[in-house]
Image 1 (cartoon, rainbow, N blue to C red):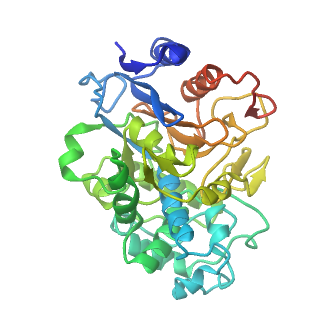
Image 2: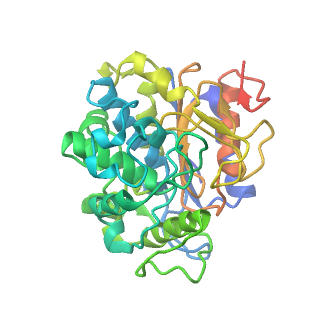
Length: 400
């Protein structure tokens, strides 16, 4: 049974959400849509307990929180943009200006911009690491200092699945003395009153919906070191270790900046709400209006991501629509032309659409095992845009 609120103008979103449970195997989930700064959809349903599709669980509640994996990258990117907006970061400056030890092994001239848009040539942490390092952001930073780019920075782009978080987190730490998770709590989640954490407090643990994981290769052991010479294999192993560790309370407390975020759908949408307007929500200014276009403009676009081998498009720290029109589950997703945000492994997503003044958040407990969104999230996105008055989603974007 679905619970929550849905503005009658957005009833098609409620209908799509209900179909996810009856037709698309949804286990437990929540969706939130904020239009013109006001919540028009906040629905939840299903179960939030159990770690397999056969386990029964407790009902999903309004305050149930869920792993959002790489949606975390959007939160960390926002922290970087806040610092740039305040004049404390310059995305064109070399990373070594903020983090001197980074500038070895061919990395001296890599600008911060290339880390944000996945062009830095450091898609994986190639040095062996186990969960001791995974739980310690500074330790991972020391490992990536040793690595050399696997392509000439700026000549290609490929998804920096775990290394993105390490790179941006360490720069934030060097500038502010705070981790990205702490900075996010102090400057974003706290002031906006969001249920969104990069570093989950123990007091919130009882509200957590365990993730129903996709199949993880038997070779993965989160307590063993990771080593791979092949770039894609190295990325895969990085991700597998993170995924296998996500059931560990220590992992959630550590707040991994690439994939350790935990949030409600309302928390995800609430983070993007000021970005869908002029940087202000309900009288609270998060960021200047002039900072928002740089978040939305695609910087790295390709029909074949060097790591994921699917079409991807990255802005400065966020993503725009992936793919070229017709959505195929797991191979892309379709947003508005001005929209930017970030999907999370398994199917979650949050985004802002400044042109249409929409903010969107979707979280779920059953992961899809695909590199992108499946029909559950895309059907909700499509219904949201139709309810907002858009009619055309070709080629690749929702348009009026």
